[in-house]
Length: 219
Image (cartoon, rainbow, N blue to C red; front, side, top):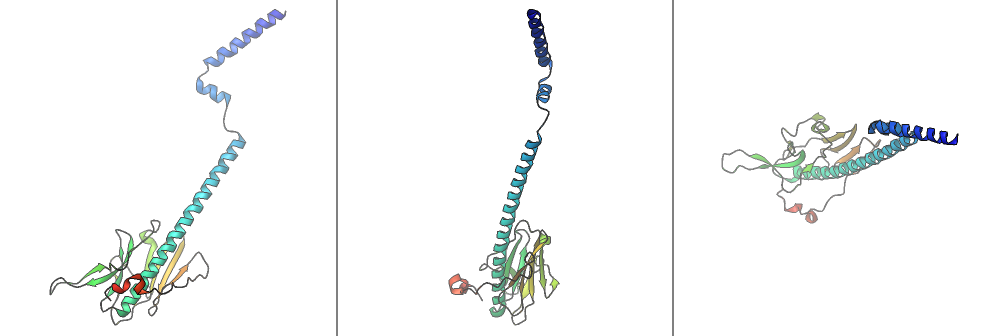
């Protein structure tokens, strides 16, 4: 009897092995494991959430640093613009270079020959301020006495002996706006951030022109 049972068991084992060998490899793998377990799914989702949150914090921090740098550079540009409007005998202006997406200070260049037309050129003493890549053309707004002006089409001018307008430069992205406002009789811009309620960043301290080398520029 034991011998018969042993033979039957061997036959069943051979049938089982033969059936599994005839099954395609993909089906055998699917048969062996039909999918992820609940614990594995929870772990995978948790790891992805952590990675996404870390990336979001890093991107936000990088953008904050870029905006802080651009705000300081624009404040310096507006300060030189105000000083030039007060002391320079030539017109000065704020312009937008759309090819580089950079805000520049421009000045009137005399004609090369008598009777020629005067042109506008970038002021070499003041570095251009490139805008961050996440601020598109529509995210830049420039106001003169409350009216929108296209500084990419024509510079925002300050004429010698005339009062300059109140200038406001707004940078908008992701429903957040940083604003720089230069009043007609001020030398320093006031910076406001919409992400901080009732924020008003004090103007930067005045710079020593001898130390910065700006005394060499043509006033």
